[in-house]
Length: 417
Image (cartoon, rainbow, N blue to C red; front, side, top):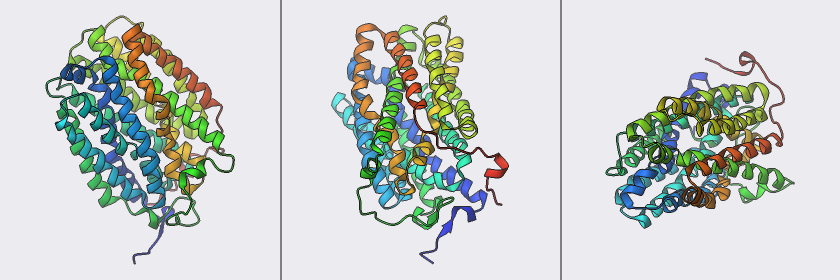
């Protein structure tokens, strides 16, 4: 029957896990395509003869597109279909990545980054809102950890593939990501059920179709504007810290340490492996000690950036320091479920999309990092990343906690075979 509805609690565990894995299929290439901006930065700059400030502007255009996409596409998802919107955005950013074939100058590169960014901006909110209701609250930190692991796995995949390419064939890297995104869209369409027919875990009824009020307006109603503003600022600090350090890491290793593309790929892979390990650990910590406890990860990330910039110049040592930094920076993986828990169920995709609103802070920040790097050197802007992570840790600790009761794995899994 077309109108048949199923509750998440009634679905067997194997099916819920399969749906979760299908949602992760496009997510891998969301990470892959997004991070080509910083990984390919030195090669694109060489190929197109661009300055550091010009190549940093790619992030600005990609982030602007992502911000607009997050605002528009998350509301489409909440009002109509989160599954179908995820398929749409996967096809969109996959096609935009393939469009890198037509990039031959600064102007076309900016357009390609903006279009790809628009569709990338819709992925996070759709993915979080789809997997959020499949499992009970005390497992959401672990799920968020797996999502973050998937994201960093996509980044590691980029480093692995990217080490075989340089300024002469950098477009191929993006095209690999584009093909993967299109395949992920097909997997999602075939396996993930229509969310309008699913009652989320603990929900009383399925989500009503076509809300009358503008969805985003509800994030500022009923005194919520203070919370929404702090979350957006927190995300902005995270993005600025990330692009201040990660955005220049490959350039630092190439220009300051004169490492080959292969060595850079190996060093960056170590950072991403650390992020993958940290993703699961911080997810378990968030489920056991609460969502705010992960703020310590940002504080430690600030410490390890300082260590990274002061260790002896050895690829092995950079790999270890990068692993430690990567382990700590992914403490924010809990933000998807955390943001959704702070708002009503019908705002789930839009609430999760606040993650991308922080790009308002980082839009011009990307250009600022390029200016600082050009004027004061790469180390200066990377130290700014450490200071920003420390400030974000303090802001995170000021937010409300949502996980009141910590349950054991056996009590909270709700698993049925």
